[in-house]
Amino acid sequence: MNSLFESAFYLLSVLLLVPVWLLVYFTRKDLRKKLLRTGFIFGIASVILGQFFTQDYWNPPYLISPFFPFEDFLYGIIFGGLTTIVYQYIFKIKFSKNTTPSSRKMTLTLGAICILVMFLFVYLLEINSIYGQTACLVMVFVYTSICRPDLIHHMFISGFTVTLFTFLWQKLVLVIYPNAVVNFWETEALQSVFFAGVPLEELLFAFAIGLGGSMYFEFSRGYVVKG
Image (cartoon, rainbow, N blue to C red):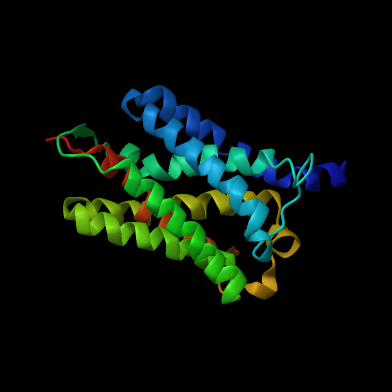
């Protein structure tokens, strides 16, 4: 039983967020499309990152197999989707279409650049993948800021909101799995800085998601804040 409980760590950790996901989905109809679309994109990205890059940062257990990473996909859908809308949900921010959208070609170009950055960090510079992911998100933030300076303050507030949201979620996980960081993270790769048990790198990554990932949906579709 204990072995099964440990093996289900990743899956159960993500499932803790499902009630929040459902709350947002059923109470903010205007956020449903973004929640689903960005979640799916993050799901695909999480599978790719898990297969090629993130083993140097953490190695969670998979109920089926790391080569059938259902947990990675679910993590992207649930956590990734929530990180892009949690700021809008809490502060009741709404957007409407009003400006020229970004080209899909630019979005694909940014995605390709991010993959190259990950290869550079992990395989050439031998810098831990979590820093590569953070750098990619900061790069997206810089590009979005140049094109849409009206979104900058929203992205910063979102960054802090996502960081707090992630901290509370991971604290709950650590209540259930007190030894999770020791058991599943590559602790020798961390800076050994923890906030109530949560690794600094997790919070930096969370801030970068809020900073670079939360408003890209609106930017890419030419949305501006209502009112």
